Picture 1 (tube, rainbow, N blue to C red):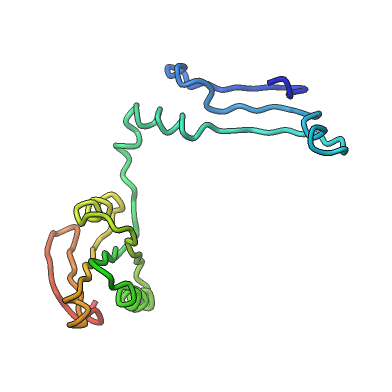
Picture 2 (picture 1 turned 135 degrees about the vertical axis):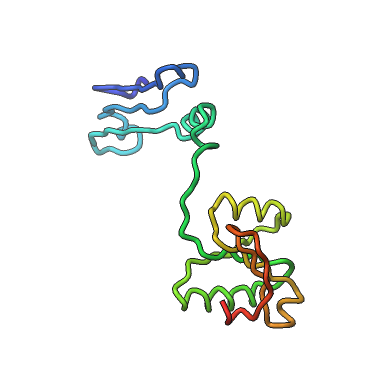
Length: 154
């Protein structure tokens, strides 16, 4: 705080003061002199994203917040088949579908939970069998129905 030369501000969330300052800043005209011979005026602000996140989680905003997604398809590779996943993704994008691929090597359960949180309308599961047969397994996340078909039938 010694580097401030003018107005200084700190904000706290009413009722959540124990988290400390959520946003602070001020004027610090002499700070640049520590790094250069130029005299430069300075003002700045910082937002405590981590603190803010914990407050929002504590009050239930984050857990209760439902992301509205326009994602038509989330492609979930099962095994080493990224080339085929890319082919399916490209096809769907050319048909103007919103599509993305889940790249991390997590459990299928975690991947499906992610699809739910994301609000994906459909999940495409691609394993070795699908690659060999030039097909995809599609799970409709709204109805829960499953089907296996040639990806060009999507």
